[in-house]
Length: 480
Ligand SMILES: Nc1ncnc2c1ncn2[C@@H]1O[C@H](COP(=O)(O)OP(=O)(O)O)[C@@H](O)[C@H]1O
Ligand SMILES: O=C(CO)[C@@H](O)[C@H](O)COP(=O)(O)O
Image (tube, protein in one colour):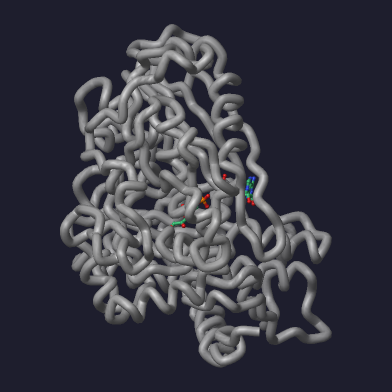
């Protein structure tokens, strides 16, 4: 390997299933070392993970990068959004973190939405109508179901700022991830005291929200050698905000990310405020906005259906009229927290491969429907640049071909696979070099990769999926 041209920086992606770490040459964007360590998520209706495991996974993944990691001059941590981390006075988790895909807080969500005056009030004030994913609903759930745990919390954090604090010893968060809590107002760009009061959360438990380009601190002495004490630590951000940075995204470009969650988003200079709640009006990790829609059932749901059918995930077949809405664990987009999966149109002639293809179609359909609304929030047209396909699923041919067939758009798959970790690395490089991190990523050419021409949109499948969703609303919306 050639010697790096510039200083080294570390980008960390602490997402739902694993932590990934990259050591990157800040001058060229070349990845000089990488590491990865898995996370455990509790099964059943709980979606919880131990923050201590994230910390150990971060140490393992960075440790796998070897000497390059200890030579790095700056580091940044991006994390799965929304998770509720509660800490005691010693900085230890009071209990496991409640994750973004845990829908048990749906009743608390409904009560909070009503208490502030309904969806429109939330959209105008916070930028988003909270889904049960949002941290504020999880805090309300905790206070109701485990009041002793809520009382024991002396600090409330998001996943990425918990990890950043472990590195620096100082609490801090950023506007991007703060915008997914539900208690940060997009209108005033500050914590909303009325909402905190409604949720029963003392603002003193929250970290300061740092501005774009500020440092969270430096790696503290106590950290026994896996990073060099004094290394600069950037604010970090939510994983979707980091991927937007990592792609150097500009208004007019749209992203479809296929991971544990499915997300569609773009960046915008206009502050989003969608009262239907489909589009979350997140802040980005700079000074702009990140209108985004998120589904709960993406790669894991389709992989589960492949496993039920005993098929490889690529073993799909075209044809037939089977329709699947793979809402295995409730769904966020559309807002159907109590939904379960639906299969309709099965016939004697239906094959297993067609059922699997139907699951892909169902997962992609909900994302593409939401993408139209995401783009509408920017006030600009749909744009004619290719749809950027990222996340673990972007490696799959079945995913890519389903997106092409149901979108009718050109699709580009960035060759750089780890856009969240790269975005965090770009943030670290931006801090170190005094540059805009998105400009750093554009200089690194992270979005480049094979492009696939548009194909005719499969209107028949889209109509069938729309009809199935509309027809099944009463069934899918019911609380069992
Ligand atoms: N070669 C592949 N083809 C299709 N899907 C893949 C491939 N490799 C990984 N995946 C999918 O990627 C998912 C993980 O994506 P990732 O973006 O890393 O998740 P997260 O960030 O939510 O932890 C897995 O659930 C798996 O289904
Ligand atoms: O809740 C959201 C976005 O609002 C999710 O996108 C989470 O941020 C989790 O991301 P992955 O682990 O699937 O990347």
